[in-house]
Image: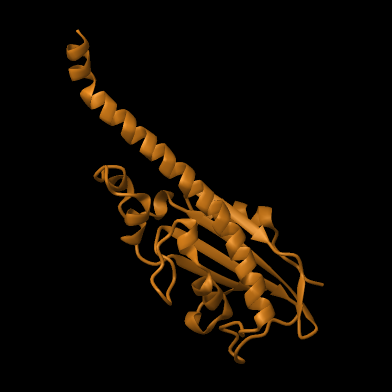
Length: 196
C-alpha cells in the first residue's frame, strides 16, 4: 500500500535535473507510526554546477580545503516531498527539516552551524511515502514530528552522509597528493642542479 519512488529513480532524477560531482540515494524499509505504514527515501547531489564560484574553486590557494570552500557556499538546498508531492512552505516547521538539522553533518565532511542546515553545494531531497502522511495542519505544508518518522529520516540521511563522507575524503586525499606533486615539481630544477 506504500508506493515509494525507489533508490534508482531518485538518483536518476537528481542526475537528470542537477549537474553535480556525486549522487547517492537511500530507501529505508517500511516502518509504522501509530498503526500507519510509511517509508522514507533520501537523495543527495553534491558539487559540480551547484558551486556559485564554478571554476574559481579550483584556482584557490593551496591551503584552502574543500570544507573551508564549502563553508562559503551558504546553506544546502532542501527538497521536501510527501507522497511524491513537493512541500513548498513552512520548511522550519517540518519533521524533514528537523531531521536534517539534528543529523551531525560535520562527521561527513560538511560544515554545519548549530541549529541550522549544513553549508555547501548540495541538494538534499527527502521523500516520505505513507497511506496517511501526518501533516501539521490542514494546509498540508509540513510533516508532523513523530519520533518514528524522525528516526527513519535520520537513518536514511546518515546512510547518504556516510557515502558522501567517503567521497569527500577520497577527493581530499587526491587533492593532497596533487599538492605534494606540484611542490616537488617546483623544486625539481634545484634538485637536478644540486645532484649535478
